[in-house]
Image (cartoon, rainbow, N blue to C red; front, side, top):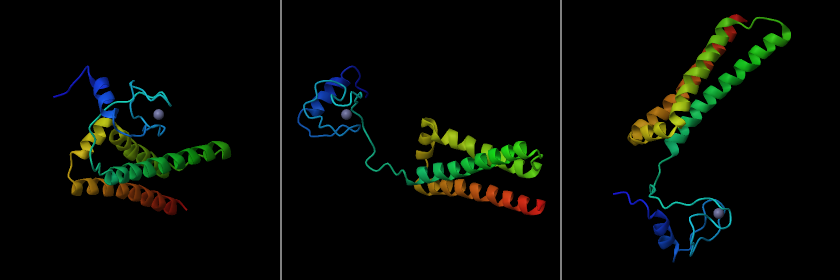
Length: 155
Ligand SMILES: [Zn+2]
């Protein structure tokens, strides 16, 4: 059951006798009478949290996708800029592979980073979470290998 309307009262009750630091600035909140930290003025809420959030696989998956999408986007910008500055048409296949890397990892990254994406990830067991994280890094390795192969074939 969600208790609404009295969350500020519960927060005051909880902090009446507890020496707890503000998560924002570290100020001791014992005896707090408001719903915001008196030091940094950030709003505070009482909430239930997981004892062990198991963030490792989620961070690994987000990082794998971010490395793939970020490097694809960087290479794409560098290729297009070099083509514009030096007046040549960038080779089509490498550009296509970079765009596939950017979209193919950027879209899953954006979806997974959202609250609903993180909730979807946490509904899976630890083994599946590790498989998803591994898949993110494999996807990055695959598009980099495709790009290197395309570059070697052009030269
Ligand atoms: Zn504070």
